Image 1 (cartoon, one colour):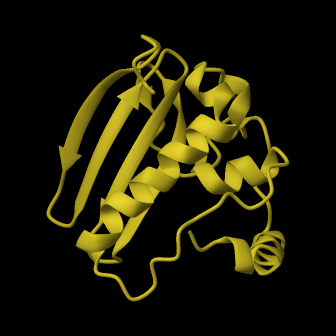
Image 2 (cartoon, rainbow, N blue to C red):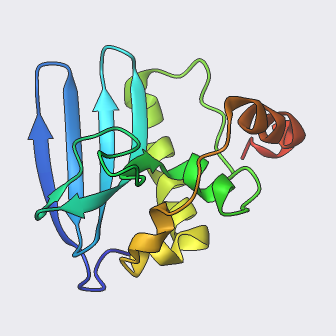
Length: 145
């Protein structure tokens, strides 16, 4: 999927409780993160600033979005709640391949702008948590694979 030549990597980075793998394009980066303390596996899309993925979490100094979670950004682009496999009750080790597969499917199915390294993908407002809850509620029956 990332073999289009638009992204370089993977570039792994770790700290005592976090592990991250980053694929870097000319305009965007795809960050796969593992936070062992919070037992969270995430996929973020960030803007490339001075050759590196943005360090700010959401909005940079200039007021422009520089980073966001892939599922929330897809919702902002009008994608109904991306299909996520139910992983409640599974260990972090068991969840990793499942959630990484889900993120890959999101990119393949709805992330063409990201895969094309198009920076306008981040030029949206992430939905509020109320909107996200509404999407989750609507698709509750369809989240299990």
